Image (cartoon, rainbow, N blue to C red):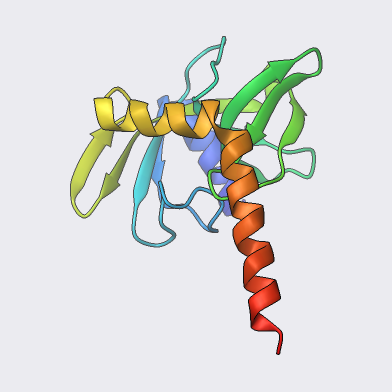
Length: 145
């Protein structure tokens, strides 16, 4: 069995799983190799702002935030990304992040600071995307001599 299959099986068997992410798509919320998070096998419906663990068609397990929903399914976006993923179906969502641990302290998604951060990521994602693209563009312009 591979690690991804193990995570999904453990979540299904135990109702929750805690592990560390790989990649930077959820920065600054989750830092690779430094933070851990807990996902619970919670039933739908899911809401904008929820950070969900889902299975892509490729089989990869991904943790991203719901930023909307349309007739094709949920719209997901990593906190550190600019490209949204469309059409994620409920049957592909394995669970919802309920807490994360940083520096030995655990934070619930119900805590006020987290809810404020989540609202920023969810409601202002078009502005956040524009700012990120502008920063990337200015870096490219000023790095050329």
